[in-house]
Image (cartoon, rainbow, N blue to C red; front, side, top):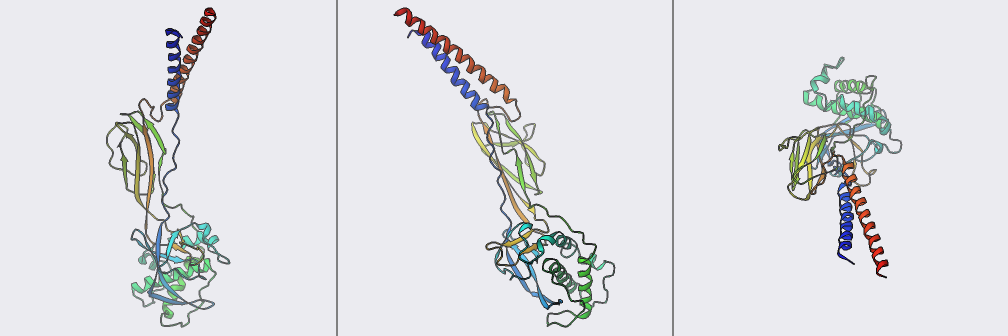
Length: 365
């Protein structure tokens, strides 16, 4: 094969290879799924030091103070929505869904909107002063504020049980045991119970668990340039964001140090590599989240969150840097078109070289 033909074939091959590289670099990166936060978890606590016994229509019931001690150290009040099952004291509970709240004849699932309304309009989310200010609140109870706080708590639990398990508070006072209430104290319980289960209770909707999202999941940029923008959607008021192997900047290329919901940022890198951006924060758990035993969900009582607690949230995204790679948002069609043009040129050169080779071989024969 003569020199010119070899050179033509080499040129054609090079053009085809270049076209393949161009097209491969122009292809958008596949998005990795966002990192998801784990459900909030905690250990059940039955505080028997503040037990109060109330008379119900069917029988007397002891009501302790229920709490969850979360893995992050927070301790929050919870209420029972599953009267017929034992409480999981010192057992692990995990955040669940409203759809999992009911069992058997238990009516918690369909009544959760009204149960959540109760939580939002009573202790610990409404101050004792505001409860005492309710129109018609009994004033001759003779109880201290500390005692009133416990009376409000057990009245709230009784109201919830009326919706979750059809357990109805007694119509009038009767003596129970050493942990029982006086006749005057029962008037306070009966009043608040009636308010929480009355016509004012129009229900409240479920809300999603705390979340942290960054979009898009991936972006690309040229070495020395910017990849992005990325945008943060977070329930957490403050976030820690790091970029392994790169820097996080704003639209003007200035370093970013404050991150919150709605923040937009870009990533830069001075070398060919993949930069992993990680974000972490702490978000408030919303009142009304259901907690289930972290095992056989029906083994222990189902509970519902009333107090304040926080949950750790996290997310991660990636930015890829390659020589000549377009930034997110650039017109990729231009790069694909240029690669296609190179491929077409290579094919033409290859065909011409092949025809000339066939012609020379015929002349030689």
